[in-house]
Amino acid sequence: MYDFNKKVVVITGASRGIGAAVAQQFAKAGAMVVVSSRKQASIDQVAQAIIKQGGQAHAITCHNGEKASRQQLIDRVITECGRLDVLINNAAANPYFGPVLNTNYEAMKKTIEVNIEGYFHLSQLAGQIMKKQGGGVIINTASVNGADPAAMQGIYSVTKTAIMAMTRSFAKECAVHGIRVNAILPGLTDTRFASALTQNEAMLKMILPQIPMGRMAQPEEIAPAYLFLASDQATYITGVNLPVDGGFLA
Image (tube, one colour):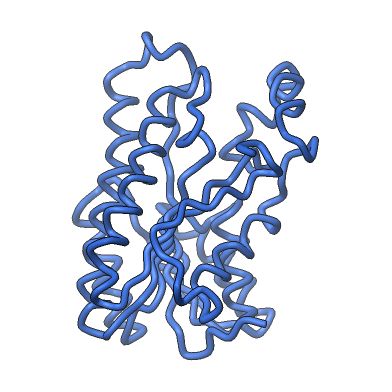
């Protein structure tokens, strides 16, 4: 259904979970995928799995909270792949789970650096390249927490709300350059990142009744939304924050 042949797609936070699932599905659709995360060994495994299945992949490390590392990622993408068609901002930090009044400064700072500064700066870097190329697509991973902040996840929810606003801001200014910018709002998904919730029976008993479909998602169920928003079937869609949440926000 989707054809990303000759397209270069960069996915941050791609060592596991939703990011890895997104990379695998773009590769199956013909894209050259650049999988990125902090640890080389982890993204090497994802890239090798894609190549083994007949896809094309590069593995380039990036610490989403560090300016120089973000610049290096984009520079290497252009040097090694020649262009950049789709940026998936998916890396995230959520080091603190607890009462908002007790959030320590370092946890707050790290969450903001990765989830807000990282997305904003990478979108700038990628957008400047896409502008010269005549267009492109940026997709941000926000969260249902951005629309409905969750208890015990205060600073994380705040950053996800910021990503939603960032998405609309970039969309409005970048449309004239042929750049579409959208966001996905995943609901509860069975990933290691969300294990504080998915592995906590007491939390699940509170959360699952709020999801009309009555269950958490698998990463492979979230990934197709990214392909749609990046595809030629979505050429008139920009500035959208799309929930993929089993009805949680309905």
